[in-house]
Image (cartoon, rainbow, N blue to C red):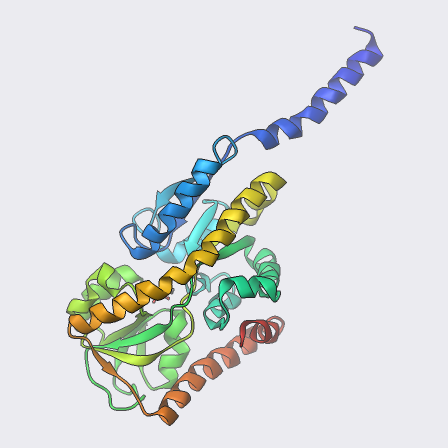
Length: 321
Ligand code: 173
């Protein structure tokens, strides 16, 4: 071959490589910080099935498993380092990476609105910069956390109680006088059974997934914060996707995020089921209720802004009603 033509042929072959690579099917490994048999993972399954059906030949999600495959508090780090590609987890489980992670519980607007008002852009700035993660979207929404107890209280004074927590509840429960002990969800049943704890924090839904209703006598109302479970992705893996693959993934994530209104019905059903299993509601008068809720948010924002003076105030502005 004439030399010039040979070089030209090489150059055009090289130019083709990125196109061919982009057209290749990419499989992303997904792990969950929540157990395989829980409502949370069941809710993710139809999302993965729909994406995989449409993504044939382009993009596939391969669900590796939950806490049996990886301890829940390690999922964030595994996503950061690329040991896995996508994690379904909650910010409270990766505060070891950055304190801002736990602020996602403080959002007072639903996922789609956080996308519109710039909150998701801010989250992605911080998540990219500090955690090497792309924040994809929220999978649980419209769901408050509650305090569940084995002993009765008359007022929001938790002095003398030992409670199971994650970072979600730590500062708030401590500010009400409780002693706290952090455990993964999988250890709560045994802690209750052995009397190691007098209660625990958890969302309004899901206690039946773990049989905690057998050991729970009271739920304190109102709920507080917004239980956040999201999909986060390794940033390098995200950047390596083609624009078409990113668009496909995000179209499904955004549709799933909009579908999160279905948690409202799940929550109503769980409230009924809790009543049917004999769990009594402890509530306070209006003024005490307001104090309880104000304290929950004040304690959390004050502490976040202390550890993240750079992003805390911006987060508070965009996350609050
Ligand atoms: O209580 C927990 O383990 C916790 O922090 C959490 C966060 C989001 C959803 C469910 C539980």
